[in-house]
View 1 (cartoon, rainbow, N blue to C red):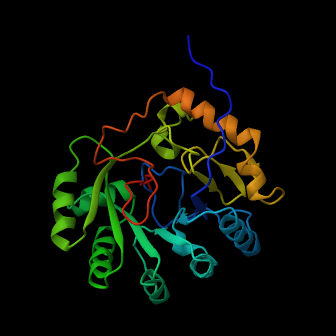
View 2 (view 1 turned 30 degrees about the vertical axis):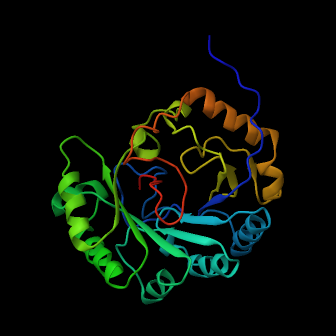
Length: 286
């Protein structure tokens, strides 16, 4: 018999995913939310996002993570990152590091900022086959530049298929001077699901535990992987009310029931969705 949990007690929010956009230069075969060049920035306005950050700070959030899509392609992203930093929030920016404008390099070097990126292979053809574009050379060069500039950086070597050169890629990153490198596996969401409906049992089980995500449509979910479990909309309800709502509690409990014991606690290097600044292993597949 499957256990039925009562709605989980509210856990103080410490991390908010700011899921800005579905626009991206790449077309990664495993993208968690089907981002692409034809993607949009959604329906959230600049002021909507400013309000979300202000509410997050007021709710006791200490960390925000900007993700997409490619964050740097959003027209208001730099201003939003600066606003988060001015609020005193530790801020991480997920970027494919394919194209980094000068202003972004300056932001990456601000106190309180870290950058996260994904890398796939030391073999350019293998890397590019996964990203759907000739991106290897630019990403590799910009990883090297970030290291030289002393930017706080972590790199996920994402294992997309059997036989992928993840070990060689990791050694390449370490030789380049990247100190935070780990190998991650793909979870079956977005394009990686292969057309199958999302299944809460494939989550890590920690979604919504001290964390939540706001998407480009204003919808709130336990995390960036569980966006189909929408529990409210920040455009018509305060973030605090959504986080304390029965809908969020039920979503968290449903995830705990579906996942059972923490499946990742023995994975070591693949410490999925355990938020922490700046050295966390939480790396959504992009």
